[in-house]
Length: 235
Image (cartoon, rainbow, N blue to C red; front, side, top):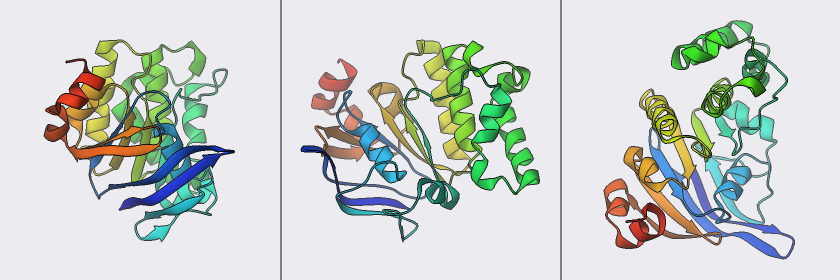
């Protein structure tokens, strides 16, 4: 469904990604594990057209994405929920959500249907739809960020560090929602430092270090890998 083959990215003389090959098949929940700065965000920014690949291929449903405008990539079904949420804090929750549907702006009925689905997934956002996004708690802001991404009607959803800065109970709630989104049919690629929580809901996972994939396997293989446990789980 979504496949990267030997993708490289250079920031000037610095190689951020070095021949990265990963894939997410239809209906999978695939995790990218790695420390801060390992290259997880660079992968997502390159898939979504915000970084320029200097080599390799990125294909979604057998269509090449490299060279397409970010808006076209979203329209084709690949939607990125960025690290740090990137909300508009002075705008209402509702307006932040509606912005996520910009590529579908001519389909008013479809936007309303998707909005109802988002409110069903996050009832608190319906209650706070007129509040400014900046007034919400960190967990609620993350719900807005995920909801905004869902407004783009993703077939493949890229979630970058959704647990960052959240309390453990909120992390649990967010990951339950991610699992629910995946079970409803959306392919998910999840970049996370919280290895245990991420692997607990994953189909498969990749470990990235210094812009290179150094390990891959299914959930159980990586949960039980001593090197992964020491580096990312603390056990």
